[in-house]
Amino acid sequence: MAREVASIRRRVSRALGYINWLYNPFQRLDVVGVYDLLATSSATASGLYLNLGYWRAAQDLDAASQDLAMLVAETARMGRGDRVLDVGFGFADQDILWARRLHPERIIGLNITASQVEVAQRRVAELGLAERIDLRQGSATRMQLAPESIDKVVALECAFHFRTRERFFREAWRVLRPGGRLVAADIIPMPRVRGWIGRLQQWLSWGLVSSKFAIPPENAYVRSSYQDKLALAGFEEIRVESIREQVYAPLHQYLGGHPDTLRRLHPAARLAARIALRFDAASVYRGLDYVLASGIKPG
Image (cartoon, rainbow, N blue to C red; front, side, top):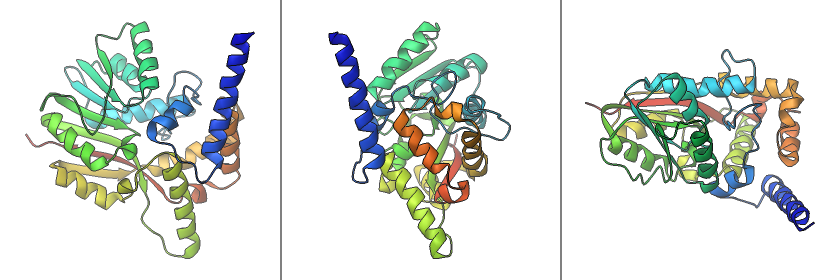
């Protein structure tokens, strides 16, 4: 009886937490608070991916989530013999995928959310991959790693959280070996459009995402500034490519036609998604760019 009561209390507490986070305009959670609340409520059918997916060829959310992970790895030219640093690894789905498909020598993961680290470490151990995937609780802006000890640094849909992204760039440059690559799949604001309706839609969409998902105001800059900040950190051969057309609109369309995917979400999050799906993707995501950014540390 006591266990049942405790379970009910946990469910009620989590439901209230979701409602307060999503529907209270004055509520702000830090990064750890957001992901502790989300816990393992992934919309994917298998695995625990939390990314929005890359939809150039994918037909479902699971495939799109994997395709985004592979796009990041391929852009980094990840392969055998590489020492990879994955910052903000979530539940390590991409690390498991990369270890199996691309066979880097070692993947080191840093994540500040202890609850995710615990789950990810257990999953990796159960798959017999603990010797190849080393997951740690740690910061992307204060890496406890030796200089020039990493071949590839990757950040899959998380660098917008870092306080700040520029500090992450500097740390990535420090730990990369000469010739090493940094790749990030990242969310930033769109350049301002003309007309007050478009600007209002941009303000609403960026404001909602940045406030609810703990994006520091220092990270709110457009593609050209992103490229400048990578250059200032010392990177060369920089590319900052928008892939938003293969992310937001197709995800919106997929969710609208697959209510079974939404049912995997917490009811409070499911309601918010259904409200968003009442509007067209162009207005919902008007203020959001999605970039694939890369740079090389000169050798």
